[in-house]
Amino acid sequence: MKKFRPFVALAALSAAVLGLTGCAPQAEETAAEGYGDLTVQFSWIKNAEFAGEYFADSNGYYSEAGFSSVNFIAGPTATAAVVLSGDALVGISDAVAVAPVILEEGAPLKIIGATYQKNPFTILSLKDGANIQSPQDLIGKRIGVQAGGNETLFDALLKVNGIDPSQVTKVPVEYDPAPLVNGEVDGFLAYVTNESITVQNLGYEVTNLLFADAGLPFVAEAFVVTQDNIDNNREALKAFLKATIRGWRDAIANPDEGARLAVEVYGKDLGLDINKEKQQAKAQNELLVVTEETKVNGLLTVSEQLQALNIATLKAAGYDITAEQLFDMSLLAEVYAENPDLLG
Image (tube, rainbow, N blue to C red):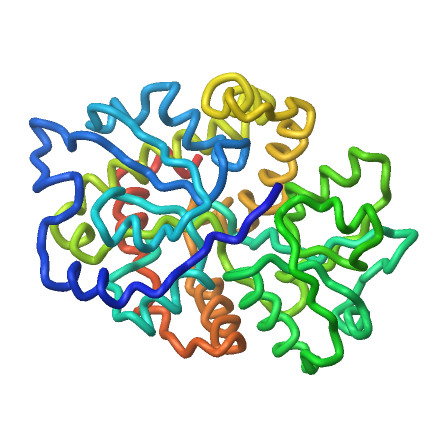
């Protein structure tokens, strides 16, 4: 199953948050006393997608950083709303979901890092079926698209590639790729590290039209926080980032263990398949998490060049936002300056 991290209208909530200070669950920090409870809102179910966070928790990195307890909340949900309400210090989302909330609702949110340097969204098709290899191959096809944020993203894919929406038939689907396998659709909006693997494991050869290679590059699994916490809870956020970097270093070194943590510990009630989770853990490391830029700048960083690509993508989707409005990489810069060993 798969998802897009949904976003909702947040006018009333944003107004309330704008009128408050210090409303986050972690109160004014004092290094001597620690930072209290850490709550992180995930963008999806507790599968291998969050292997780095599992390592950071199970290996005690969050505890060492000063957090007394850790609470991972499964998604999907309106992550921005959860963060704005103060129910989570950090939410995991992506640039396409966060930008509209900032622009349309005046939400005081920023992205302070991103695990996925390259977004994993894809139009999945069967190689012996529609075999959709390029945006132009979408014309005349039936594409399964989930309602909400995924539909917004798909519309942006058409727009940036000069395809009139009338030339493509959007078919409402959920997150199970069965409609693709059953022939009800020619293509299916999916994750290359999730449904694509699921369908391959059913014995089908697949074709992936990656959004990142088709005019829509943007970061995903991005850490979203309030401006208030950046201003008044900065050390807690830096402690979170440092511990999470350590966790993802472990996840990259041992993807099979990350998969096991998902299947047997954090997502033990989900009935996850260990072989599929191992495949996902390895694929995300190789395709999305580790890049030439992260090898130089460090995990979770979003370079100025990558920020510019995100801004261009958002503009193509109809959201005119600046890098300064969306990103704040200063916390990660401080973390790496203070802990140069994390770059090794």
